[in-house]
Length: 405
Image 1 (spheres, helix red, strand yellow):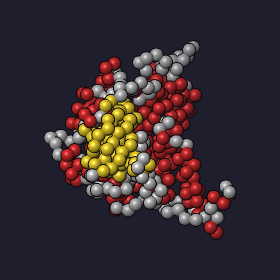
Image 2: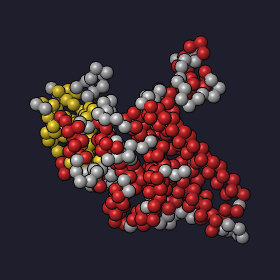
Image 3: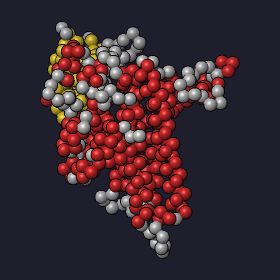
Image 4: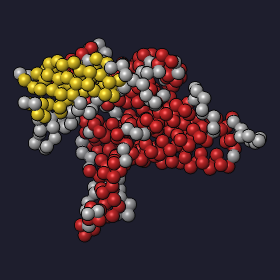
């Protein structure tokens, strides 16, 4: 049964689609849609209940984001990114800063970038920050903005005990940053992922947080899972929604259109039926595996357990594989009916959107290569590994690494 948040997203289909079609909304989310999503409480599904959020499972979040993406991918992408950033602010910021951000008359919306392209130094309880940051998705309707900053001392990066540089994030009022206004892209156009500059300024230490997300300040399901697991869930949900819409559009068009010299509609031809059923099965398989992997993660989050290394690699695997499957499905849907060349074209929009979405860093091919040793080991010890099983060494301690030396 569809969860209540996905149902709320579905109730906005008509509004989202009509607003997305307007030229004035070609770069960023329609203010009308933004207000409607606020009213439905959809920006705060990952925020702890103590701060006014819903603190839902990742599966619930996936179903809602997927539903939105089937209406408009850019709207869904923006809300997904805003939701994760707002979760980060609510989970990792100090009590004092949370009170500043969440203590107003309405719940705030955040955006955040994660690459450490800013610089900062620390003195007398303040971080002096400056820098230019890219990919501020959903920044047009955000209230607070954070970028990642490498901490410097005496002109050199501060290196932590684990060998990594010290990196802090800091959520600032949007009026403390400058938008570059440089958004001009091939797909996912209305995500408004503008670059922005943080002019040099002093920021109190209690406005900052550990950008590695290792120090949650308050409990939540997302904090138990870890930020990158939630990021993977959100991105996977978007591409599932795009593929779902593409299959729908192909089926509708094929049911109406006839091939040259044919009395039957395309949908009644054996070629279309065979190809459509194969791609529809791929969609169902990718969606089922996604929900299965993240449901197992949710089960652990409910009990406060950490994900095993194998489960983390399963998340990376399903994220990358589903992105590629959905890209292939949309490519098929676009070519299956040969009527998507003229604008406006929903299949054309799905094609350009998924081409951008499928190349996000969370779905890069290295994810599968990094995940391979753990997953191959799990198959080597059992002919059907159970979802929650820990990976252990192969029989007789022979591991896949031994064959790659």
